[in-house]
Length: 323
Image 1 (cartoon, rainbow, N blue to C red):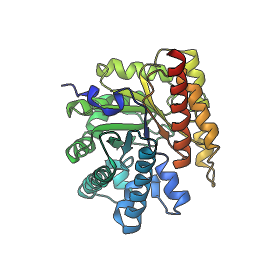
Image 2: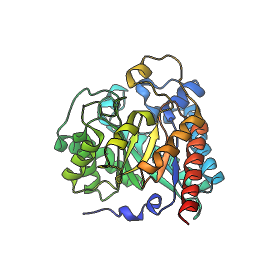
Image 3: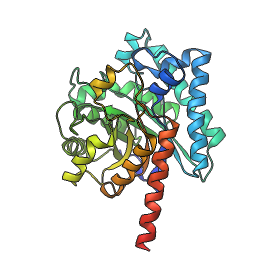
Image 4: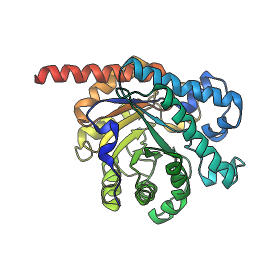
């Protein structure tokens, strides 16, 4: 059973934006603790729910300002079984957190979406272990079984797609894509890379994408790169055109530091938003199908605004040159 990938609004030829670094925004700008970087915990208290509402609404307003569409991924990156148990959530509480996360985004969409500014809701499925270092490996069948319950919950709650973010080895990405296929929901797979452009497991980005496609019949609607600075993966894209057509989304870090350096950094490294935007316009010739741009760790609305502006301006210059 195939999902209707072509129906996704962000695949209709217009550049969309997505949000920025939810966890770092809440931690460093709102001054709220996120144990294990689990944003879904914010749903459990009034202050947290207000912070999430403000965070997502600010990006909806930014998308409206730029007259573009928006992809919003739910705060459920940590809302899977193992992390839930670590954080004291039983199966029912975890189910409620996933459902409430989607309800929050549906509320945002009801207030901000228009036919000219559609909002796509992604059910954010994170890794079973750590996103930035490989703690254990599952085979694809095990990964499918592990992630199936969360994916089914998100689908029943009304998501438009499953967004598998910060995948650090292909077998887990394969399992998530297969679980999404069994629910007939589009799957977006986003890999993270180290400063050398390789996944934490050691595979190259082109090899990881090719392996995931081979094992799923090309099921993912497209691929993304997240939680990495453009400087980390641009050389890979220049050296190999193997995966360029399949990468249609970027959620980058503000900092050019490695994952290990960021983990040990007590201060927020927010880099230079305009420089980050310029780096994206330089990437456009290497990613001809780029459809969604946004941020990850260290980024906020300033970065996403700059990224979108530079990409949009570059696209307009390219269109004029071709005319």
